[in-house]
Image (cartoon, chains in turn red, blue):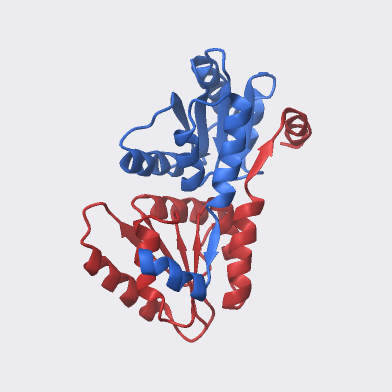
Length: 139
Length: 139
């Protein structure tokens, strides 16, 4: 089994992130699906699609749903899944979050949700001029 | 004048983020350029390209450089800009960060760098089942 991953994002962002992750790691080591949100998609239809995808992914260990931005259509669509007990939703998808999730794909749903959050946050850094010199010496 | 934005990211991530931002806001209200990093790009050549882009963008108020992930090629390339005084580098690009930068495009370099950081961090949230119900009521 293992937790599965459902990405819900404005097209073409989800696929771009999956492509870069695949290029970085050589594989996507977690059962996953991508729901592309286009501006002209009919809301009820895409909510049904989200539900079908989550149900298809769920094999007993739950589904981590990651959306690109809080308060926009992809996060609203994730609401269609709120009555599934084994679903957690994280917003603000970035590459460090996705790589962290891949690196800890064997964790349970609660722990993997925490890794998504910490991976996303830890990856957001300012390289100040001083740190920059230190970082760049090793780059 | 105003600060300019240089995005350095693994292709096709930067363009995907710009496309979604443009679709969300209707425009990209900041002078900007995108440097796509492909795995087969020659390092010295792309460092030169980064430098040329930053110099072309700089009109006196500085350049905010945002990369997709710390410690990987795009952030290493940003090192080519370390001797430019009016450059700040932020890693971990996500959609909330980019939207926040657009919304505060008139700020100075230091303040805009802070907005990029806070926008990126604020956008990473777990919607717990309880919060989810509250959020979804209004979605």
